[in-house]
Image (cartoon, rainbow, N blue to C red; front, side, top):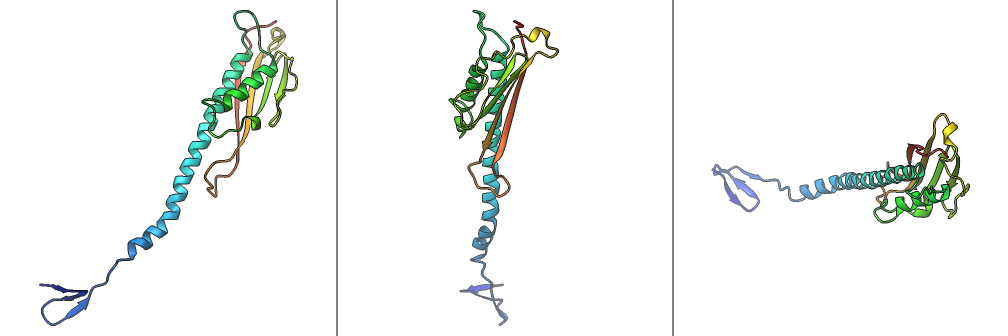
Length: 178
């Protein structure tokens, strides 16, 4: 039978042993595991951030390509500049990409009737009066593509996840030919 007296254990037969205390062991273990845990949590946050932005850009590019290939009920079709501007606004505003800077999103619209670009940092598109699907009746593949490109930097500084360029493309067949 062991009797405890302070930090000394005695078995009753005259032999006494000193017990080892492990008071600081859990603090040391926590200090060793904490950096790894922080990096894992940071990587999860960064991945979610980038994934959310990519989904938003995919949706914005598809919606813009869809708007480029159709006419509204009055027969009006959108110009290339309108399509590019709307794609950028859709990607960055309201329910847009988390943390995305609208002016840093580059947009490219290409169709059988012509193309235009809205470069990052610019407020106006080149080829603004072009209608992407005009003249598509003679084209072998009358499709319009809208491409968004954005250099994204995740919010948490994880060593293996730096700045990335996110690219999304929407592609639709033209519905009108004139």
